[in-house]
Image 1 (cartoon, chains in turn brown, purple):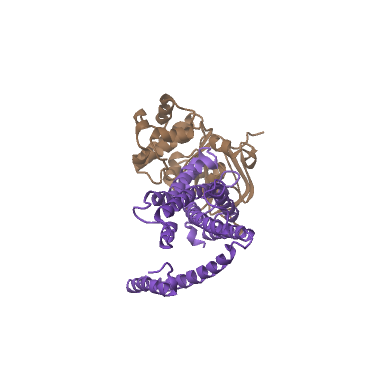
Image 2 (spheres, rainbow over the protein chains, first blue to last red):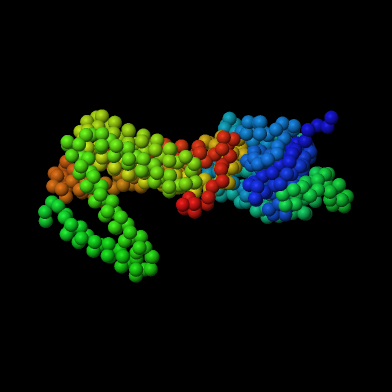
Length: 225
Length: 262
């Protein structure tokens, strides 16, 4: 019997009947590697991602995480296990240290916090920085470090580079690849074909409200990508 | 000048309404109709209330009528708060509890500790001042809470995504909203006597009461109001924020502004 998918969507609809954002969607995301969910604006790809950590719930159908119905899981525990980085970096008031402690109040030693920053490609000195004064790229990396502070087993990234310049975006893509190589599956939403071709191990293409194609990157994108 | 304003005096005060109307017309504010309606409505309401109050606070009238009046004030305040922030489910009941708690605590102090005698002429005005001020702050809290959560949805969801419960995820916003709602009352209390002479004291002095006695009554009322406002805003904010999250810790869909739905 094959291992259960990282996430599976069974006949999932979202939104009121007259304005569905997803309509009877069936899909599964493999447990491992970096899966890119791509599609045009308004196709429902962010909605699909938000179903994975229960910031959104289906109006009909069922979402499973590694075989378990998400609706039966404790939402707070699920969200610590399935972390999320949002489209726009949202830092909280205070220093970078304060931000990391929001995610992991028990981690009160700076060494552990500095280690998180290092995984997000930031130096220890950033702990003292005012989170409100960071550049977009730095803020998004603090958000990544903050998401990693809950020691997640899966990372969801919702168009995390859309507000960043090319260099900052490349750094974030590299960090996501490092996490995948360390064994943390990443689900990355994008509307950029180029980014999908650079990043994807697996691809789920969404047309408006339903799955267009899915499979490994070579299958869906062709060997030449 | 006598102690009574009289209807001639009242008519004289309408000169200032005419000034407001002239300003509205000259600056094209389009508030003239609202101004006239508010003046006429306020006049009719207060005259009716004055007449009813004269009967209720008559020493021979059973005290139960005064208590019923107090209940009416609390219920009306809850209904008004509910109407101003319709995006909050169950706000009528939350506001009823909040204003009821504020009135109960204020009454316990004002009457339980013997500041005022328990009579119709004290019960109704004290309840009116307490609940009137509490209601204004409760409306600010309810309206601002919906707006702040709507504007701050990204931060709230970023916190929820870290596994924080709704109470922790909304805490910074609730604190900000409570500070906003309480600060006018705190500023009013700070400016007492320097910037303005508050209503009860002014009324008593105009009615010929010794200014020191008037000051003591006013101070007692201001402290009661401050406590009442703090109670009502806290109960309203904590009750309302709970209703704006689902049981599985998601922020419900909210209008951009509470006024959009009104």
